[in-house]
Length: 418
Image 1 (cartoon, rainbow, N blue to C red):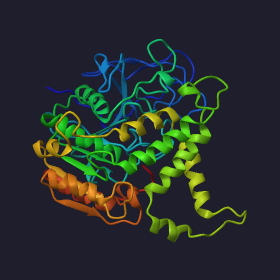
Image 2 (tube, rainbow, N blue to C red):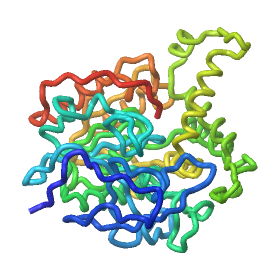
Image 3 (tube, one colour):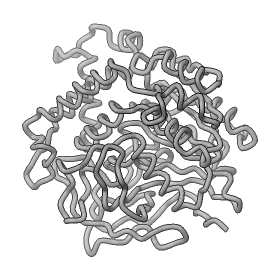
């Protein structure tokens, strides 16, 4: 019988002093993982052995992870959170996948270890679209991330931070790590995989690369392959970070090293503009200035730059952005059209009508090739509409899950960004 997971995914907080603990406590399908105490300087990454564990659990891959573009990660740990309980047949599990700067804390309040409330809190919980009275919901922190999963800010087997030695990873590599999480929690086949933006890219990869392990997918606000404009926008953001003198070739995880804070702030400002619609920015800010003479829209961008710096790592931003630049669900499969036509997994595909970063035409392509109707999220929020329009996304998820859906009504979600 598959192992049962406890509701909430909660675990005791790590003590900031004393020996590094093992996380999680040994249980069926889970491997206790030694947690190093060192944390990076000049970074908003979660620090094992220093910061509270919060609701994270950890799974370790059973062996080295061979990467799509060459190289090997000899040891990989994945942080994840769960809500609800896995049923006896392990048939009620749903995988939720986050966007670029998200993490495993998809639902729940801000608390020690989790400085922000869940990024899809209005979607997950009793009576909500992902009804945790009926479903077992799992959200992992992505490979290359900075909130508990192995990435540039974590330590390599030699005890030093990966830093500039971190290899290039792809969306397929991220999904390969998530397959190990599924094995760890006892899920052979997900009832559904749900994701938006970079999470939608991984949902696509799950469907095409592991169709026997996915019942259906919900793909929001992404494309099947990166476009020239997206690659260009991302390339400028990466350069803003790597050209910062504090980057040090990625090896800024040293004492008294401030890191590329200015570069990451610029990258986030550029990204934030692409995440919202021109109409919304004009209505909210126009050309108005504050008392100090600063444009209101510039102050808004400064706020998001500072907010990200407190909770994210520049190395993760670079490696995850590069993964999106190389995204192509058809690589090695005869092209994305052939890959999607051959995929047997049922799709729900949705885009945001005001999205200028991943415009509706990209979701139209996926829907046509996967023989699925296109659903349109009406929003003035641009790309971030997949996060902010909770009611509309909830309706799509309820429709997709069918018999697992419940009649509760989700609450609104706070303003977030991809």
